[in-house]
Image (tube, rainbow, N blue to C red; front, side, top):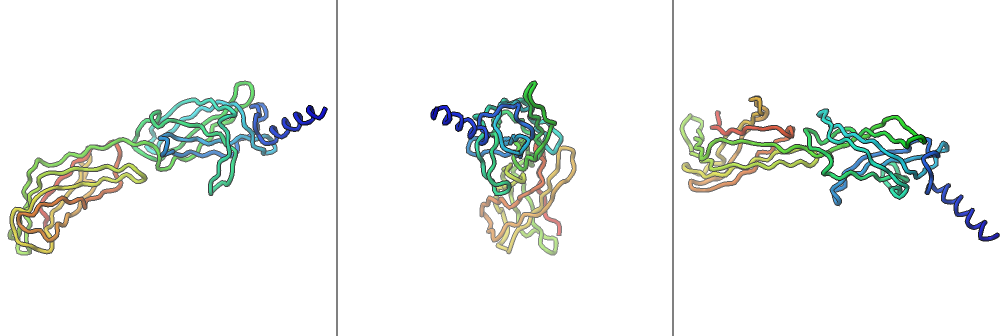
Length: 261
């Protein structure tokens, strides 16, 4: 008799704790969020389930998921099956401790696009047991984005640096250029130019100009490069051109020219 009472007590405790519950007991969604997991190179969609008393439950359900980035590109569509084993306790500063299912999506399953931000839309259901309307959460600075391409002038390129009178103060030869595209958080383009000061005396700085054009020929950024304290024969490698607001997937043209006073 004591053994039967003990077993019954364990069953009641499991039900109250939310473990082993069926989809038929699920009455509401209780919290959801989306994140990228750097250590495992995948994404987690966290969802919580609850009964009509707002008590957290675990259950076997199916989840239809689609992800649309801020460029209105659908980068993922899929269905994931969730089992009670996918539920555990998770703690965040915003929501505290929650009992949630962790639905994992490998990074390779999400297509690259033109924006790292977007929305995750999902529908939770179990045939003949439970069906919820589609809801959504934000995907912030975590979606994979397309690479860019940058084309440069033909090198070597000799640029004259003028003095205040319009005469030639020095000649800068650009021998090459390269770029780096950083995709983390806000996309950033860094241009590095490589060259040599061919002639001219040491001055505070030698100034040259640059312009960046998009694939439709629109000028999207311009500025100046300041090369400091170079003597004739000095070689340099300058990475001072850093440009934000870059569009993933775009092809740019980077042009250098003489600085006009």
